[in-house]
Length: 145
Image (cartoon, rainbow, N blue to C red; front, side):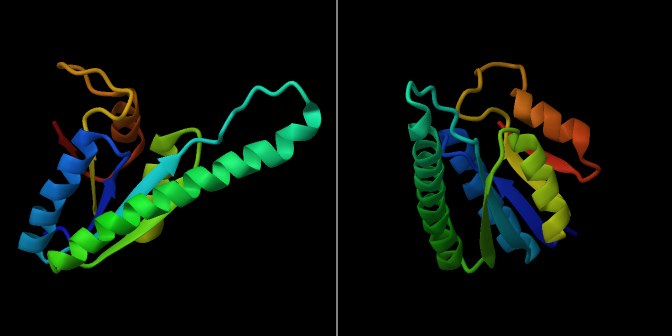
């Protein structure tokens, strides 16, 4: 049925639970997983203009490294479960755009993501990024709650 799953993770407990569920699903289906972590550009307020370039670049680079370390750990978990897995870190202020684009570029046939991210509300409403992914992709989306 599904052969290539894109799993969006952001470090929240819900996204990690969605990843663990995706591992089971992928193993049962014989599917590959592509993980994506979309990190926002670092918008800093600085008082000295000369600090802007290096400070923003440094913070974005550090966020990218942290995201890659996080994904490396999840990839290792997938390998231990004998599920083929690769990871993508992207810098984008609009995670929904990065998720939809990665799913297309990687040839995925299903997107799996949590109903709420790090800034999401608990309850009955879907998170805004999840809603945007649902509105902008033609792929099926499995929303983990």
